Length: 448
Image 1 (cartoon, rainbow, N blue to C red):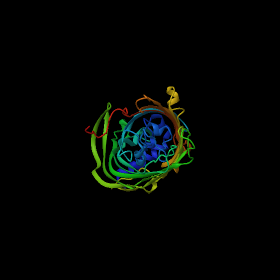
Image 2: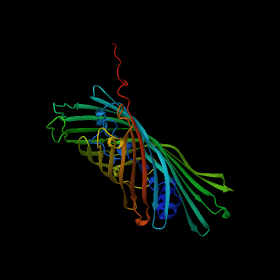
Image 3: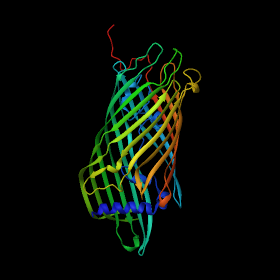
Image 4: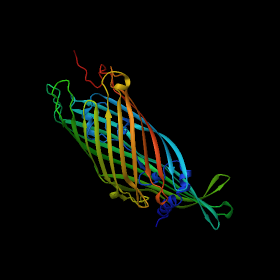
């Protein structure tokens, strides 16, 4: 077995054999050492605060990530940007630690055109994150040996999608919209790298050389997804001023992906004198081992109902990460992945169209539970979360721009078999900007 593969196996064994020490000294989640790191939920703040739902029902002034068909439902050009800040409490059977982080959740732009029949969306968003730093000490006959493990990096996703209304809404004299069918397709490009370092630090007085193994996995991949939205009247208006309910069904498909991978590794010995490292000798190295990592397809199904005040949706997403195939020389995933499934519920409520600021605000609620794809010691990690927040109109008279504020609270993992249970709280902040309807953005000029 190659030295680097042996070292990787030892890293993951020691990582959870000594999880108490890991938890106490970690700067990030030890679970990000698995797979391609922590897979981040896609979506800007408005979507995140309603549990991540967005397949069956969409909003006219915000993009629904993963649902390009919804781009055809945009009312005007929209610009979204978001931030979040998290605190995480990690607990094991023997210790507790806390950490914090703040991140940009990306940006997106959506533009309707073609008389409301077409819409495009584009942007950049994080896809996964790797961030861990752990240390543990193992006593030996020659003294204590300290093992240090760290990783950083992750993947980002650039996307461009187009949506088309095949059955545009046709309002009757009472305002019933009738049947609506939209389709969409999206091109994505995944890119990023994952870097990992493992050190074995021996007692200085015994004359041993320390060892270090470093690896870099560079990933690039074009991907694609598509979606369909079908909506209709659940009840019908009996007068012009009456309200009615509409139903919605959404289906999405993430196509299989072949990620182009470039793998580099280096192992060498060194000594440390007064905290100054001195190189001793190379153990092994390999430059640019090329290969592919094949990801399976993903499926999503959403259903929902809405009227002028309420929108309620449920979604189910599935991706069999266990079918991931790694074809990169001398590289293997730290452990097998499992199938991943997500169940989400989301709701929004708008009290009034006019009145005070908080009566015109949109209140958001959500629930989400995800199982997998990380599996540790036979335990498939489960993440459960609840979200709540509101969207405040910045200037409801001239624009449909919004300030989004909210919070997410959740748990992941278990303390069984020496694993880590993580309890987190995330504050979300987002801004959606649309031009004033008097500004002729993206409108073809005409000669009068």
